[in-house]
Length: 193
Image (cartoon, rainbow, N blue to C red; front, side, top):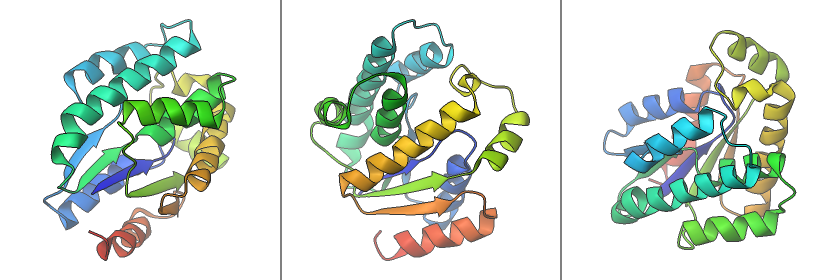
């Protein structure tokens, strides 16, 4: 079973994945970009904000996604795989950066994923106030430095993508307390995994 945890920076995905791993200890946790040796190098390039071409950025994300799928997801598809981000984020960021449309981006991502879609998506949604507060408490990488409005546009794109895909999903209010969110996720996934 393949499950994506999606959301913009600082929304609490990683915290919740850590809590879920205590509740379900035999899950395989991975992340994009950076879940493979190639991904570590791709992540450095992406977060370093050194690419001038937004299409090059998309292609680097897609290369990482294909490598991640081939080396992590595909050989473990019979296990419970939780990925901290995946193609939903990839599409949402690409939509914020280029004129490429949903259908084109979906086609590219399906190619990278060998037509394999996740079984479930957990989407974390935050608000401006919480985002500003959380970003203010950390050093910003190249993508976070694009600003709050940019990140909120990416979040809106994520919601659009998730609703359009037709994959079962749970939308989480990321402004709630950690324990309430953890309970909602456990309740949602409990009968499925």
